[in-house]
Image 1 (cartoon, rainbow over the protein chains, first blue to last red):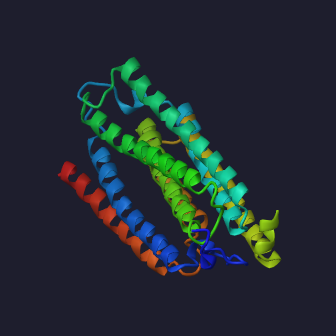
Image 2: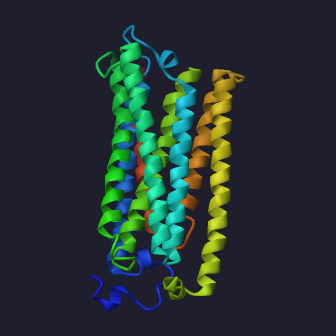
Length: 207
Length: 104
C-alpha cells in the first residue's frame, strides 16, 4: 500500500490508528470482541468457582499451587503490558523501529510467561498426577487457565504475523490500526490474568 | 531520524506527558500486585478479611488497565464503555447463576 499517498501523509495525524474509517471500525470491532470475551471468561470462572472444591479425593488447590511461580508469571505479563504501551507510544511518535523493538520485547515476555505455564502444568501432571481427568476441580482448572494460555499463544502468533508482514512497510495509516488492535487485545489478556491470579491462585491458597 | 520530523514537537510533548502517567499506572499496579501476594504469602489475615480485600485490589488494578493502558479515560470511548460494561453485566449474571445452581 506504500504507493497510496493518502495512507502515507507528509504529517502523521496524532492518532494514526484512528485516522481512517477502517481504523475506527477495527478499534470498535475489537472492543466488541472484548465485550464477548468477558462473558466467555466469566462462564469459565463461574464453572471454576462452582467446582473448585470437588476434588474427588485428589490434590486440592492448597496442595498444588506455589506462589513463587505465579508471582513470576504475573510480573512477566504485567511488564509485557507496559512494553506494549511503550510500543504504542513510539507508534504515536511515528518511530517505526522503536515500536518494533518494544513489540519484540512484549513478545519475548509473552513467551517467558507461556514457558512458565507449560512448566507449571507439567509439574502438576508429573509430581502430583493432577490431570484434566483427575476431578471436576482439575477439569475446571485446566479449562480456565489453559484457555487463557491459549489466548497468550494466539496473541504471540498474531504479534509475529503483523511484525513480520509489516517489517519492510514502515508505519502508515494502513497498518497503524493493526498494531493498535493487537495492543488492546494484549492488555485484555493481562486483565484476565489479574482475575486468574486473584481468584484461582491467591484465593485458592487462602481458602 | 527523518521520520521524527513527521510529527510535531507539540504532539511529542503531549505523548511524553501521557507516557509519564502510564509509568505511574504501572508502578501502582506492581505495588497492588505485591500487596495481594503479601496478604496470602504472610498468612496474616483471616479468610473472611483476605478474600474481599484481594477482590477489591484486583478490581482497582483492572480499572487502571482499562482506563489508562487501554485509554478508556480518553474522549471518544462512549461506545467502547457500552460494550465492555455490557460484557461485565452479562459476566456478573453468568457467575451468579452458575454458583447459585451449585448452592441451591
